[in-house]
Amino acid sequence: MPIRLAYSKRILAMMGGTNDIALGGASASTTSGYVTTYIANARTAVSGVKVIYEGMISRVGVDATCYTFMQDVITAASYDVLTGWYNDTNMKWQSGGGTNYANTTYFNATDQIHPNNLGHDVGSTYDATALESILP
Image (cartoon, rainbow, N blue to C red; front, top):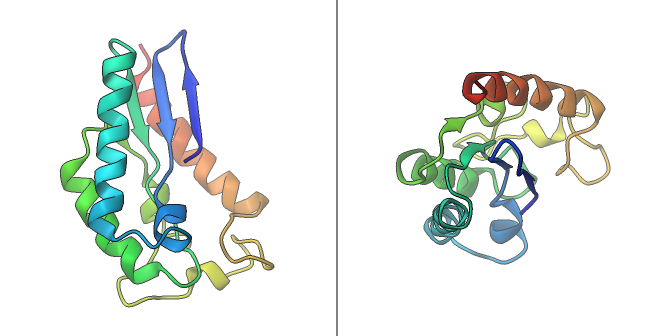
């Protein structure tokens, strides 16, 4: 799970879950538990930490599970801000197992997992908005 913790501002920005589902075979509820536990551990380790959860974007082969996972996380995890990246029309998973990951305007054409430069630009815009909402 990629983690970037800005200690001086006590901010944890995280995106996670796809590898647990796609590579580890974990269920949506198990993966939701991992994220919820990770956030709880971060709050224990760093007093006053603010958590930005970026959610999970589309990924080849697991969109339907991603949809269930995000529904679990939205209700269960104790993040401070959920960014709009996970719900962007061009980046999000689709409940019926859609194919946004195949859109080479936003995703790497080779792996259909990682965002390309434009996809990262989309995510960065959402992340900046999230940061602005929690910074003093």
